Length: 428
Image (tube, rainbow, N blue to C red; front, side, top):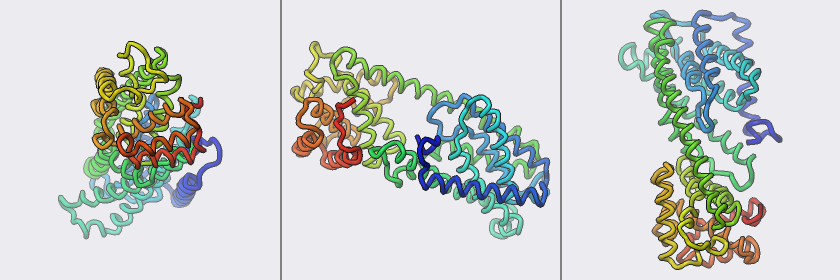
């Protein structure tokens, strides 16, 4: 992702997010330097917690939404901290931001020395979201307004939970903005709608986000009762969750690599043209984004597109060009069902197998992912047959919208190809 890693010019959204985070950090650092560090013991405890969480990112598997959950929970806990061992704190919102920024910077030094890249966008997001939480919580708590609203009893935890919910929404908005900018930098055919990305980010909060938020709130309440030693005990379960989530992500990555290798089996055996599965998967993913698919649904689509021809290995003789659309409907269904049976043995999941199994059905009976795979596969086959180029291939797909291809999918494919200059799928 060029925008994220500094390759090429940064998008305006990325510049705005990083600029806002930098300005907020400078103001917080300047104010803390002038007025001094309030309650340095607490600042040290939470600063070390955030730094340790950032350093624990070592070995993070690709695809983790939050590679440093301990750091995120520690930063939120400091932002939502009102008392320490029964005594009110006085650190304020700007000191929270300053401590988090310094902790992230200190953790980045050994990571940089080991050659690991610092994710500037994620650091900016954390600065802004923690700043949002601190600004929402600290002034209301210090002025007593929160106590007047929620009381000083069992209802008071609703206050930090409300702030936490608003903070999570703020972070989802920023994450969706940055993800769309990164997708724009990847190419014109891969731009998902912002609304779909935002929904995806909000849904993702039900996973690790809940554990991070709960740990942050519980840690803040624990310090309020027991003092600064509470984080050492209360953050233990989150560490175990992080290890488990990392292992699960690693297993999913291995499964994806296995499917990519199996997809090449049809090419090596001569059943499909070289690069066919890769092209169909890339183009199907772009069409899925165009139609609003994100997150797990997009992953299912990508994996099914990679594996859609695996059933051809059951044929005694390869079909010319791998174009099974020329076969009788019964034979197409047999190949699709055999392919689904193979996919079920790979551990890819029943959703992926169902898409592979149903790609030969009439499109009105198919799930959306199967409709996309069927249409993109037909487009790649038509381009490989030299029917007259991409425009001619799209024209033939439009002629088949009565039974074979959903009109909305064909039009989405046309929009994706138009943004990419209508490059023939069979090229490269």
